[in-house]
Length: 275
Image (cartoon, rainbow, N blue to C red; front, side, top):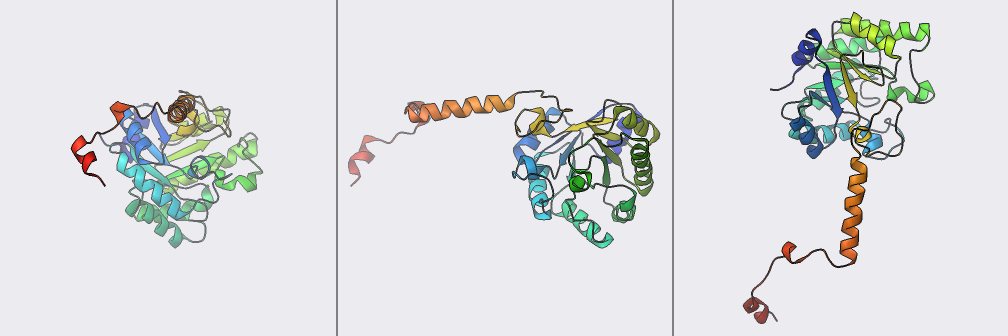
């Protein structure tokens, strides 16, 4: 059955954990969808894990639309959420609504996600008025990496924790249907989750959230540049892929692949008439 924003709310109300993963292409989205994942995020993390950038700041709207199109073709049951990339909603409310609309109409997403707190409530309200479901994102927000001075846990002090809680309340009031909490202390995330009516999706924020999300390359061991502390590798798929690549290269170099069973034949009559 198709997951929707009402599915997410119902799962929160009935204390059923929500499982989300990222995806950036058709094949991966299809596999995740067939596994029964509740939601797929086409994250601007694609800048790092797919495009090789050092951060997410270089990702464009065209990048996001391109990858969201592919994911939406593969996901038939999961809720597809697409990130609004850096500077795609920061200039004006009109810009925010237009770009969010593009992710829906061109990309095929069912919802969009933006980073930031109370300062973006006007944008959230405008999007929801346009019937665009919005997911919020607080804590370690990668688009603010330069302001944070690196990838650091957020909300460790009383002032910082209070700010995240206040932002969460403001975003809920503005109309977000769910909220990602990234890299904040587990006890703070649990308190926020218990106070909000909407579901929270944790990443590096403990088990007290209403759901969890991971970058799929991290949890499959495909992205070796950096592994965050909060990631558990559920499969060493990267090693399996390397083994396959090694075996392929070896057989090609030894001329044992392709073997006769992998080739097509032509009749001697055809060969004899070639000139």
